[in-house]
Length: 408
Image 1 (tube, rainbow, N blue to C red):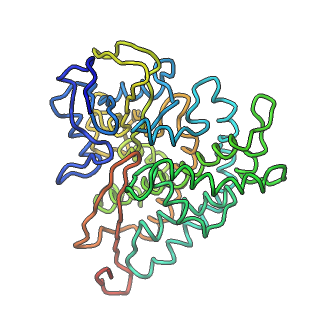
Image 2 (image 1 turned 90 degrees about the horizontal axis):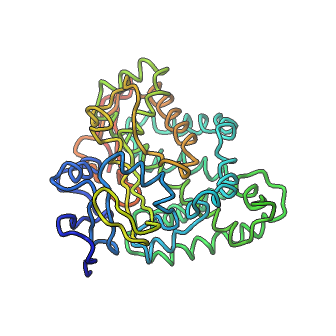
């Protein structure tokens, strides 16, 4: 593409956020390698329609929180395709317009609401673990991470579990597109799925999260069908992907670090605080904002309408924000990060995510305190709007049984 004339040559780097992995490096080390390379703190890439990238924690936090300069009207790149398709409520609105829509969404994900489903989370967690515990092996991604958070979420929104694969596939096409669908097609397929749900639940007395949103009010009026569908799509995309992948990174870390694993297994009361340190160490989301007006920013000229991408992995892993950032320190005091976003659009599902990960660690380590990545198994990663461990195969010794190789 043609480089805009106001962009200095020394700010240009060829970097694709959907393919950030460097040979021999995992997802987080690949992003850190960019931050640690000899580049300015704000760079511009011609990839994905051309956009800016901020590479320091303080800048990530500012871009995500300063809505007076950086609008949430567009959050994905390329702006003209992914960005337009993903203009969903309330994410695409800035304060104060977003507040009544966000209130409808957050009421179903509040700490009080999560407490009401905590017993269900724990029961399903125990059932899943005990379902494969005696086998001495599991495909953690398939057997647990793609089961617990998604099945709990489907209960919260009262949708059939049989629809999980279809909806997960569509969510993935927004966050890690594989080219099988265009972004407008993803948006249309989501709308075709949710529109009948909106119609069926409109005017009903359902207590599930979607029903409460569909029948809620903003500024004293009912939602339109398009607003209700839009809000529901945002909930589905947010609920079907991020926690799944965060669990994969957490369990991979524990599988490869017996000292930290033993620490949590021997002192489960430390798990609750440990989840924040794990969130700091393994952020996943790479999201953008749209420049509201021409401005000077960190030595560069930003033009109205340009996109600035803020990679949350670079906040928690910035040594100017957290000492020795790659070290997981469960005794760390203040852990500075933007793993759940920042400002008015901080992830409304953060409490649910923390609760699910905490319960996973409590129940897993009580039953399988010692485990590792299956010998010979190669862990692979995918970048994108939400980074992922593609698959994770774990093994452990079952008391009274000889160790056996993981079946393929």
